[in-house]
Length: 448
Image (cartoon, rainbow, N blue to C red):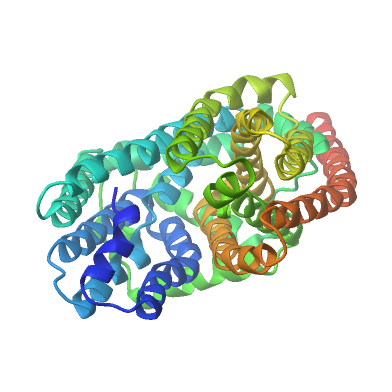
């Protein structure tokens, strides 16, 4: 609702194009560094408290934005939003806590579809409000009101039910023999490895579970992680981030980065390229973008059936969606007419939606559900790096041709495909090794 209006408002406040660019990049830089920290903090203090904090501080930020009559106040308003607007990431982490691994792609797909609908309707509502006098300020206060209502809805969630659901999920994911067999079976296919080599996460989770069992009969304020000393919370956050940073998940994060840049290059000069290549008017280009965005939202409901078709083999599904995405970017770059662009846009929206869900699911599979906030936050930070690099690369590529950005996107997407072809067999080998170890230990327990 607000994003399309920011550049116009900051220029109306008297900022030069350079200052407007610097102010605009502030939000992205803050998001880059805060995504992982806030996500990890939600692992430490719990989803409910962290989500409430993020929603209330985002409310404050949009409220200040609605009162911004100077550049200084505008920048001040963007700081809390840039640091704490991570409600979607925390909601994804919460969903991963509440559902089993087999249900996760389906639920995440539906959640992404609902989020996409918001991104489609937001600019429409914001554009309508802006046509009236003081429309930007009305849009800002409307956003603040929406975040405040969401905070109220989160506050109404019973704390006891939230804790119970989370503990049940951790117990179901960590101690259930039936789930272990399913989990390690999928590891053979996905090449995933659990966080058994991350003793800190396991120890912390066991400690939280033990504490919960010990005091299940009563509630003690000193047991609430949110009320623990700040230094203790920061120590736990730092430990979790260090574990993820030192893990061998670099390949998944690199695939995410390459594909994020490739997709952003596809969209970076889309309107300009349509006008220069096919003499398409901006109005028709807008219809085409809206059509693609709508398909992307609907594609979220296809994730579950497609995952079942692949029998939860998320690594194979990621590979195939990445190959399809790279092919579609190439067809768009070489399109002789607008009808081929329309065809590529149709399948591009579907392939990118499935690919994003796949890579998030693989990150959670390999890192462990106990660190879902940290992992999702780290993924958002990697995507933020892509948002910084993509405009830079797009500008350089456009110096050569209007087809330069998507052509460069094809190269990056093919690099992601090559990386997946190299790494997936290693994931499979690790999965088979872990499966064999688990079966041997399980058979020994049955004998005894």
